[in-house]
Length: 361
Length: 235
Image 1 (cartoon, rainbow over the protein chains, first blue to last red):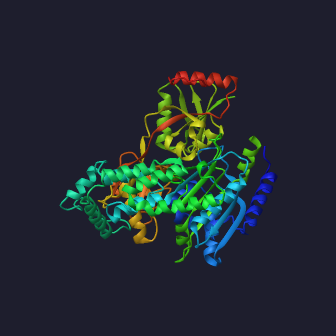
Image 2: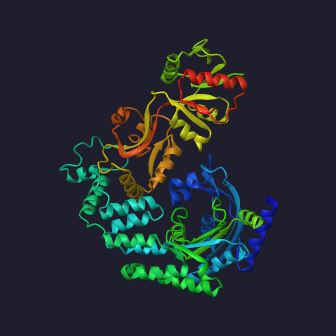
Image 3: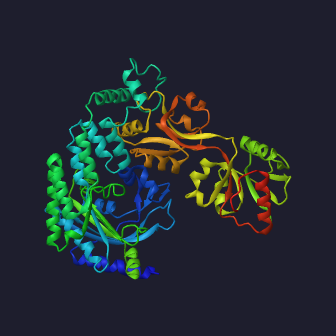
């Protein structure tokens, strides 16, 4: 049994390791304004974070992670480039699995640097990897940027591309939209009836609520425009599916993605970015043959990551969550930056899980 | 000691529950004055009737303070995480049938499916500067349903009553509520989404998995389950 004192000592040790790499230690409040997190993640965050409130400040959340408050702090007052480290509790509401911790220590390392994003990716990854010297972990990586580029390059309307891009992090809705736009899913009869109706508002009854008739008419116009849009080609669908199914060690994945890029030129630049990152990782002594690449990695749980993503997992303990995770979140700095933005990447370790695994090894 | 049966303390749900047990030879009655929550049981020994609000019965089952309880499965699933580990369905009682659904204004002629709701949520947020509000008291069930379906950019607002009126009052754009006939929805100019059924519910007899049964309580439970002609699983 790992004690809390041991976990705290390990957290301090890891943070000191990140400080030795030039990171400045920072603290953030445990209580975070709920509105910011709800704006970013929507209602789903309520299922993952504890919400509390008082009459003065309204709804607050117990810090579900450090990234958002650290980004806010940097965007308000940070110098560039910047490296931060922190150690502290995060709180995650558990509604299904009583064995998952609802409060645990996290130690993180974040880099805000415009100069060389590929090297910043590699810097974070190798700093995390160094902390796990001696533990046999599966190291999974992915790159949300490749999928984003593929969606942006589809030969279809902007409206469809926006709808797909919005749901990259919701694989089920993404698939449903792909089926809709390719014509593989039949148009619902209610929508067909609406588009064929001479007067769509014939049985509408009274207008109630905030959403105005103009908004409804605009949507009908958008649906009409969409109905006249040709379906996504079978070839493009196949390419996206082949892309999503990519699961190889990193060097083979690169070959595979280069092959795909011949028919899907929109991902070429993102694949180049990946290659430059691989070179940066190799320069920092990471053996690329031992890294997995999964094109869908990070799509279900890491909504703010929009480029490189990674996780360190215990192969013999599939019941445990990843012992470390991280990724690039440039878009988050844009959303929290009041008009400013900066490329940023970070990773976190769970010292408690790390000690648990070390005790078993 | 006695086996404790929790039953809703008032209204049609209580009366119909009493009728259901009565048809099986077990007389449940409220006793004392109209305001006093006292009760009696006839036709079986060792069974105690506990009158509770229907909304509290899930918690009491989970805590093991009652062995059996009658309430809607909507309430059990909303209030208990991993409810199957805490309570077991003995039988549906065939009344109190209602569906938890998502409804939008009838005037939203362009919205009939969750796909429409999701698309409109995005546009609504862009126009109005806040997320599309869905009024409900079933926060957990609705949130999990919409997450599984990949609907984004909405928010849940709490409504403990008169939920169907929230759209007209402009405190919500849509509702997620229990309906049996749909009449209240129609009267408030709302329509159910084609794929907006979250849960079918009815009055259900639950057995707690956490309440311990001592020797004679076990006999009472066996006798009761025989009398109710419920298929027996090991207790």
